[in-house]
Amino acid sequence: MQFADRLKNVETSAIRELFKLLGKPGIISFAGGFPDPAMFDIEGIRQASSKALTEEPGAALQYGATEGYGPLREQLSSFMASKGVAVQPDGLIVTTGSQQALDLLGKTLINPGDRVIVEGPTFLATIQCFRLYGAEVISAPIDAHGVKTDELEKLMAEHQPRFVYLIPTFGNPSGALLGLERRRQVLEMAVRHQTLIVEDDPYGDLYFGEAPPPSLLSLTGSVPGSRELLAHCGSLSKVLSPGLRIGWMIAPPALLANAVMCKQFSDAHTSTFAQATAAHYLKAGRMPATLTHVRKVYGERAAAMGQALKRELGAAVSFEQPQGGLFFWARLTGEGGKISDAGEFAKKAIEQLVAFVPGAPFYAANPDMTTFRLSFATADVGKIEEGMARLGRAI
Image 1 (cartoon, rainbow, N blue to C red):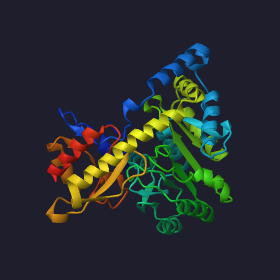
Image 2 (cartoon, helix red, strand yellow):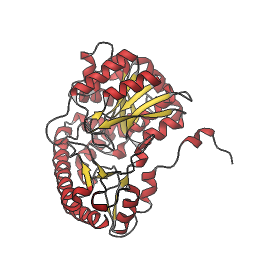
Image 3 (cartoon, helix red, strand yellow):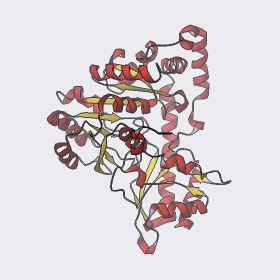
Image 4 (cartoon, rainbow, N blue to C red):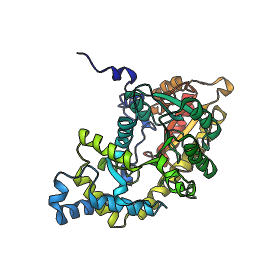
């Protein structure tokens, strides 16, 4: 059987492949990027789904508009307003997770051979998605404060990309937080180069102390001309439930219209029942309490992981303590003759019944083989401390 040529540009997710190794009894995994199921507000979701079936069963179980279920679009408009973004319900579309939003951007914007700039490192599925549509994916370097804007501008001038994709707030895998001044610089560069910026924001509500700077979308009002060059992708997956598959995209009208057309060809519409459930949940006003709880638990786990990493691995690793999100991004220093290749380290870690993801797959080019990602989301403090002790033995 012959397959489409586009499949030659992608390969199976290294993270999904790693999960095949995680069936050993007693293994502690820091590999996934999942939220902890214990954080799900099950009672709130149960009440919301019951209301959907009680108050509007026909609408909740019927086909729906491709753009999204009206009451949910209204609630998402209010949710974004609470974060400083003014958007009308018809200024956003509901997607099947924010991953579909990224896929729709690929479908609507990328021609084979087009160049797209991403952070190096960035979300692995994004690299795969954009390559599937024929893009040449170019990496812009980052540090602990997000993308290096001086380097990004050089790349924009040189490559004239179709768009620039960023995760400014607690990026996956880096955990980096783009500072306020750099955010403004990104928007100014978008206007200067007339280049679309795609802001992916699945982690922005998961901060542990002080709130992060406003989103790029909310800052567009202070940079004339930038709102027409900004697409924003949001999600309830990390803060409510990934199983609902509720995401959304805010973008200029012409881009939204073409994204809706492409969505019609793929899934017709996101599950109306899931959308109705999410709408009732947001309307009930439970989200603020849920976020407060999630931030507290994840913040405690992040603090425990940072302390345990320093204690058990010492000078063998370097990292920045994340201020939010789900991830640690660390580098092997090779100090004291210890391992400096994260792929080799991952194999030795599996022997000690602990798992993480080597960093190389998160780079579109020139991977840093010393890097690796740890997620603290699904392990309690006890498991985190035991897992770090196992990593200490592995190294």
